[in-house]
Structures are given as C-alpha cells and as structure tokens.
Amino acid sequence: MIYVHIPYCHRKCTYCAFYSVVTAREKQPYVDAVCRELTMRRDEVSSPVRTVYFGGGTPSLLTAGQLGQIVDVLYKEFDMSGVEEVTLEANPEDLTHHFLADLKGLGLFNRLSIGVQSFHDEDLRMLNRRHDSEQAVQAVKRAVASGFGNVSIDLIYGLPGRGYWLSNLKKVSELPVQHLSAYALTLERGTILERQVEQRRVALPSDEESVQQYEALLEWAAANGFEQYEISNFCRPGYKAVHNSHYWDRTPYLGVGAAAHSFDGMCRRWNVADAERYIQSVATGHVEHDSEELGVKDAYNEYLMTALRTVAGIEKEKVAEPFVERLRKGISRFVAVGLIEETPTHFRPTRQGLLHADGIAAELFV
Ligand code: SF4
Image (cartoon, rainbow, N blue to C red; front, side, top):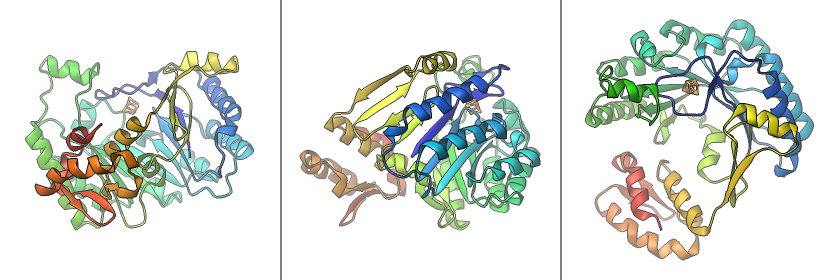
C-alpha cells in the first residue's frame, strides 16, 4: 500500500483543518521531491503493491504530466504487477475532458474520489468550495464517460439550517457513482468556520439534527442498494474502498510527501507538515520526520478505535492475548444494551452502536 500526499489546494475550505497549502508557486519541485522520496524508501515496501492512493490537499491540481512522472517512478521502483486499486482524489472543477483523458491514458488510475460535499450552491459558497452544483454533476458524468467505472463522491451532512440533505442523497441515486463517503460537519479548531461560528455569522445545526440526517442517510443507503461498511462509507456491491479498508485492519503502508504518515506494523512515522521544508529535506537525502513506536497497548487501542467504526466490528482473533478477557468483560455491558452484537467471530456494533463508536472504544481502552 502506498499513499502519496499532495498538499496543495486552490483555496481553503472553511471547515478544513488539514495541512494544505494555497499557493500559486510552481509544484514541480514538490513532485520531484515525492519521486525522490519514493526511490529513497523503496525498500520499505517488501511485497507487491496492491493499492495506491493519491490524497490531499487536492491531487487533481497537478498536471497529468506531473502525475505521470510519479506513476513512472512507482513502476520503476516497486512491483506493481498485482495492483488492484489506484485512487486519485479530485475536485470537480479539475475534471475536464482533457485532464480525464490524460489521466486514463496513464493506465494506472482506476478510481476517482470526487470532493463534491453538496449539490447545493448555497452550501458550496458557505464552505468556500470553488465548484458549483452543476460542475459537480458534470464532473461525475464526464469521469464515467471517460472510462472510470469506480467513482466515489464525498458529501458533508450537518450543514447549517437547510433541508438540503435529502435532496443531496436523491442526487447521488441519480448519478452513476459506486461509492459514497458521507462525513458530519465538525467544527475544528483554527478553521475559518470556527471563527464564523464564534462571530455568529454561521449557525450550525444541533447534534440531534445531525443525528437525524445520519439516520436518513442509513435509510437512503438501505433503500438504494448502498451497503454501509464503515461509519462514513457506503458502496454498491463489490465497490468497497480497498485502500482505506486496509488502514482499518492495520496493514502496513508507505506514505510519501509532506505530512504523509507511514506505518510498518509497529511504528508510525509522519513527514514534516511543511511543503518547503519537506522539499529541502528530501534534497539533503534525509526526509524530515517524526515517529513513534507503538506498544502492545497502543496497538490494541488503535484497533478498537478503528474496528468499532466498521460494520464488521472487532475480530476476536485479532485481539492480542493479554486483552481478550478484559475486552470480553468490558464489552458485555454494551452487548446488554444492544449497542454491540456478539457473533462467534466478532463483536459488531449495531446500527445504534455505530453512532456511539468512539465513546464505546474510549470506554474499552487500556
Ligand atoms: S480541498 Fe480538501 S484539503 Fe483542500 S482546503 Fe478543501 S477540504 Fe482542505
């Protein structure tokens, strides 16, 4: 598994707390640095690559030529003979006929994850997105017409005081998308949205309203052939996101680029979250980064946290021996109140349990 981080964005979305850079600067030095890092760390990927994910930021802000340069290095340095899924995160306004044709021509990308967020212009303006609703619809249609048979879109629910959520979902049913990631709008520290809420320029809906929208999402998914497999992720049969699903089962991965995380099964490492410092450090032959060794407890807590957000839940066999009895005791009270269901192999969150996944995990941490 390889993750390539492209931190650049056209502009800053009001809700975004990720590391991202809005700049008119030339992106080529960054692309060169990513290529060099891939070469420098080639030995960190020992088995054939199954998935590659270009995330951001806005990876579709690179030219097809720059993406092609990274693709060439992937083929040169890694065994790509068994690759299953290669995703590009893209914003609708970047998905022109020309770009899509060039991207398809690279021969590697087979999945697009399009940041739609809403099909209502009022929402999109409030979120400071660059595209409008019609551009989003046309981008999805163009992607499919260009040969991308696996298209995912991102939507945000819990937006301020409007009854648009149901019509957003209806729009998804009308479009040829195979996957939906639906995220609750959350107020992150240091964001433009936080300031707007403090200044009372934006009023967020209550938690109850957000939960109602989430419930509506679950009903819509069940009625429209979208299977829920994680708290925020829904797909048509056979279209689970392979790359992202592996994060939840703790598969090792190599992450390259500024702020990219890597995991080798025991140690987490994250590159410096500063594109300029990243470029400079790669030039010296040593990528600036921090890392932390995960102890058995940390690994167990992380597993609980991610597994309880999936519909499959906690696989008993994956629980390390010292914690088996403790988990059985701790989780029984959630089984008793119907938040968790026990099967011979798993502890699975129920529909209600998924809503409380983070709280349940926190109660079970060691
Ligand atoms: S496009 Fe994505 S990464 Fe960039 S500012 Fe918007 S939410 Fe953040």
